[in-house]
Length: 235
Picture 1 (cartoon, helix red, strand yellow):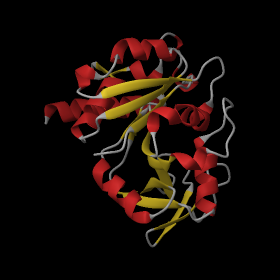
Picture 2 (cartoon, rainbow, N blue to C red; picture 1 turned 90 degrees about the horizontal axis):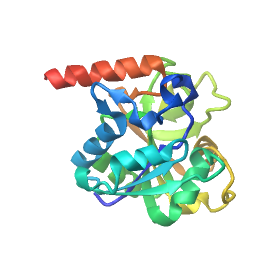
Picture 3 (cartoon, helix red, strand yellow; picture 1 turned 90 degrees about the vertical axis):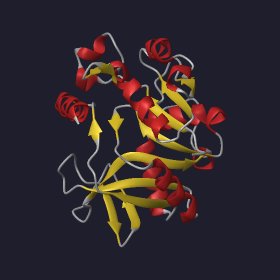
Picture 4 (cartoon, rainbow, N blue to C red; picture 1 turned 135 degrees about the vertical axis):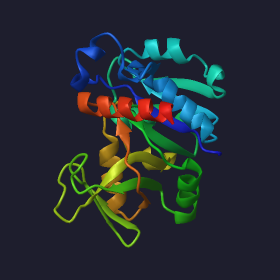
């Protein structure tokens, strides 16, 4: 594994109040373990050796828990939003000096049973500026927002999804740092906007996965994710 992983963990997590009034979402207890620790252990098992945490709200608590990453067998560094929360896109742009030419992007509330090495190979073979993993969704987990046909990602549109869109963003992407060059420094913008523009320019590759994702962004998702880890622990 060569690419570093940027974990987006800077949001306010208002949907999880009151839990997130005193701790950031990344530190929520999931079946006895802080969620970020589950993510990092899993990434290490996938061969990832370098992680950049994009943090904002209560980010110092994440730093105190994770430290430099050595107890997880990896190198963890931090990029802070500062006084203004930068959103998912702005946080990545701020972290670029730590990330390099190409990098994975993972949401801080997602656990994804997926082969990272295969995704990396697919991205490098595509010749495109970015890659999005997609799952055939049929509006099951959230509103479908990806038009994916015959192995090609034709359009991603979170703001105005169409009836033709039956896939959803699975939660793992790969980006070339250069795609963020045209966006403003130190100002908020959304990664969804970046992905949409890349898709209509024909620069967003798609990688289809078939196993569902788990997320702790909502109370319902948190319960399902806890059940997943409890069941896994029994196996």
